[in-house]
Length: 74
Image (cartoon, rainbow, N blue to C red):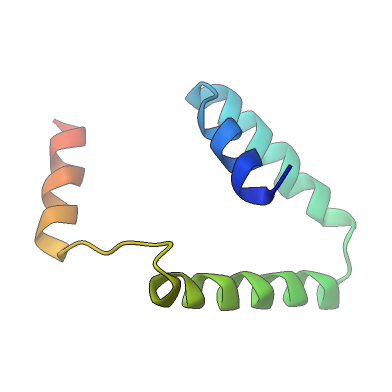
């Protein structure tokens, strides 16, 4: 199973279950050394930086993002 497939499956979980899973995953990083954590964050930053260029991530005008956020709060 790829990371993308795993993420897709996890996103199908109820929000409270996803929060619990996220907490457990973050807690599992406590066993890593500072250099390992730094490397993982750097890898993540590089991956996120490449997403827009690869077409994996979309973008939205800031006005639309704010409007959606306000609609969710209402």
